[in-house]
Image (cartoon, rainbow, N blue to C red; front, side, top):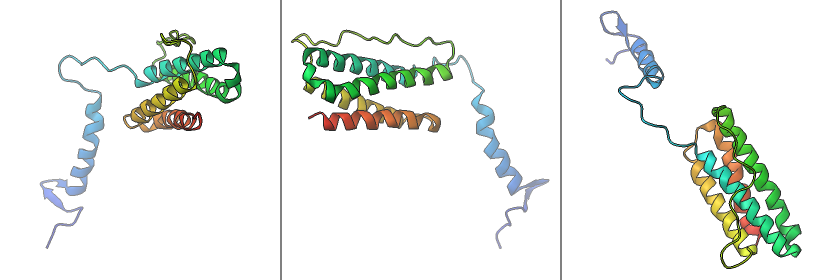
Length: 161
């Protein structure tokens, strides 16, 4: 007959105690390191926030070049500005020493002239893909924010045709 889950497997050790101890080992070792610690990778939300600022600037430049786009594109400018702020706040929450990036990014105008709706759409879709990819690698407490950014960008990309 098989052993009962609480039965002894050695002197003074039962299976339940052994399993409980094994479950505690990974969390206990999580704070330990052997040898010099490797540098940590940059927070992926930093790049997503920079892309949000860039997208907002690109969309604003498209509106400036063609004011007829204001009704269709201004909501994207507003959303991407809010994304940048929310992503910066999340980065700061985990690393209070980090200062948020400035609200303006690089000059969005391509070499060929002012951006149009196609460039804005392409940027929104690229940002949606980047955020979706990042969401797959994040801890559960950060997934909601990044998944929302991904959904918003992908939706704007789809409707800006």
